[in-house]
Image (cartoon, rainbow, N blue to C red; front, top):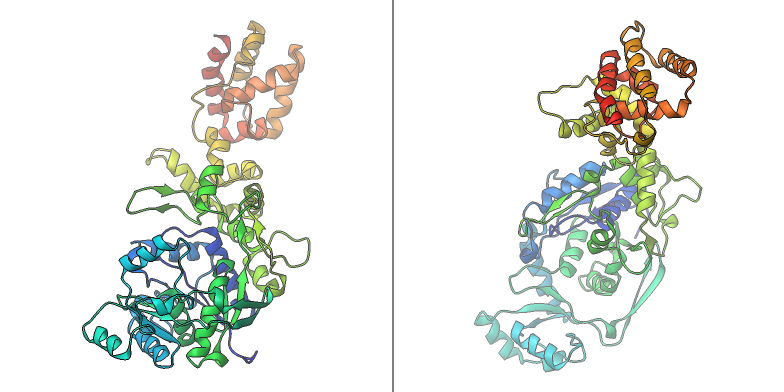
Length: 509
C-alpha cells in the first residue's frame, strides 16, 4: 500500500451495552492517529448480530464519544460519502461477496442445523468446524453438486463458511507487534454469512473496510486470532493491494495484571469500567460510569491515552491537542497495561486543579442543585469564590458537596465528641463574647478576623488549639475544610454569629 494514501480509520463497536474503557481507548487511539496524520475518524455501528442488539446502545456510544471530545468525522449521525454507517443497512451488499467466495472455491454452503452442531459438541468437547471434519458434516463440500442444488432450491437454511487452507502460513506486519504468523490448520472455518442473510463480523468487517477505504485498523489484541481469516478474505476477494495496515492494541489488564479487565472486576473492586452510566433496558441494572463518578472528560482521556502509550518523556498530563501532536504508533506498548484506579483518581485531581473555575462552574452548579431545594439560587460569583477555596481538595467533581456543603447550609450535626470532655464555662463565655464582638464588627474579611480572634485568645489566657477547633466545628460541623477565617469571611457576619449561638449548646450538653 502506498504510504501516501489518505488516512481513514474507524471505530466499529457493537450496540450491545455499555462502553468499556478498553473500547473507548480503541476509539481514542484511532482518533489520535487520524488527527496526527491529518486523516478521518469514522464511527461504524456493527449491528449484524440482531439478537444482541440493545435499544439505546447506539445513542450511548455517540454520547460517550462526544463527552470524551473524540467526535467522528463520519457516523450514522454525520453521514459522509461512504455510508450507510450501520452494518444492518448495508445487508444487501454482503451476499454477493459470499457467493463470489463460493464460486472461487474459497467458501462453501453449510446446511448443518443448530441441533446437529450441538450433537457434535457433545460427542467432541472441543469441536470446531474445520478442515479436519468438514468432509464428514452436511455441507456443499461433502454433498454432491446435485444434492447441494436441491437443498438450495428447496429453501433449506444454510450458512456460508470460509474454507480455511489445510496447511498454510498467513503472515502480516502488525504496526505494534511486527511480523505475526499463523498456521491455517489451527483456525476453524468461520461462518461468513448467517442463515438470516446477515454477515458475521468476519465478512462484514472486510467488505465495509474496503468500501469505506479504511487505511489503518486499530483494534484490540483479542481480535488477533481472527486476523488470518480477515487477511485471507482480503486476498480471496481480490483486494489484497487495498488491505489496510493492522495494529492490535495491548489489553487493559486487571490491577494485579492477571488477565483482561472486566466489568466484574470493577464491581468487585469498587471502580467504574464504563465511560458513562449504563442502564440495562432488560434487567434495569445500572452500572456507574466514570462521568457520573465525577471524572472530567479531559482526565478520563488523558488516563486512557497513557494506558499502553507514552511519548518517551516523563510527561503525564496531556491535553487532547498535545496527545494528537505527540501520538505515534511506535510508542504503543506491546504488553498489556495494568489499570490503576488510584492513578486514575490522581489524573482527575490534577485536571480539576488545572481547570479554570469558570470551566468547572456548570459542573459544580449541577452538584449543588442536586442537594439544595429548587427554589434556592446561588450566585455564580459566590460559587466560584468557594471553589477557589476547596478546589485542591477535590478528587471528583462530586466531592465539592462533601468539602463545601457548609457554605450553602448550616451543619445538621456537630463532631463534638473529642471536644466535649474538656469543655468548661470559660470556653462558653469566650464564644458568647466573640459572637458579640463579631456582631459589632464593621469590616468583615479574613485579614481582620484572624488577628482579632487570636488576640482575644491571648487575652483569655487559654491555648489557641483549645478554641480554634471548636470554632471550626461551630461553622462547619466537623474538623475539616479550608482556612477557618476564610470560611468565616465567606459565610458573612450574621451567619457566623448565628452558627456560634446555635452550636454552643452542643458543646455544653
